[in-house]
Image 1 (cartoon, one colour):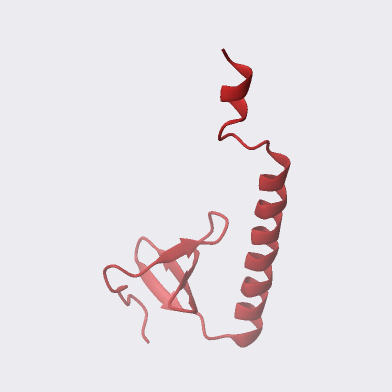
Image 2 (tube, rainbow, N blue to C red):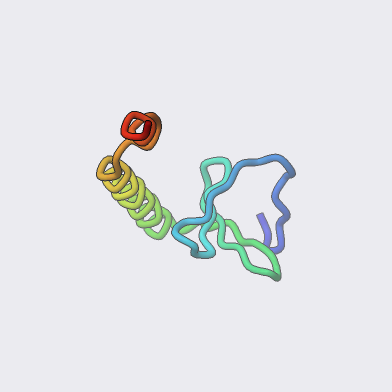
Length: 78
């Protein structure tokens, strides 16, 4: 694909930790206000995959630390 490729409407994407790296359709893209470029460097995309997996694991670990909000407050109030 060439630079300035538009993403199809309705496709899901997620920016990686607020960066310009976006995963769409199983591929990593670098996006900016002037367009987007498909990342084809295998070493770079593997590192993006590893970083995304580490971020997901960290998010899950933090979520487990937070008390369950549903129902826990209601039981204490009367």
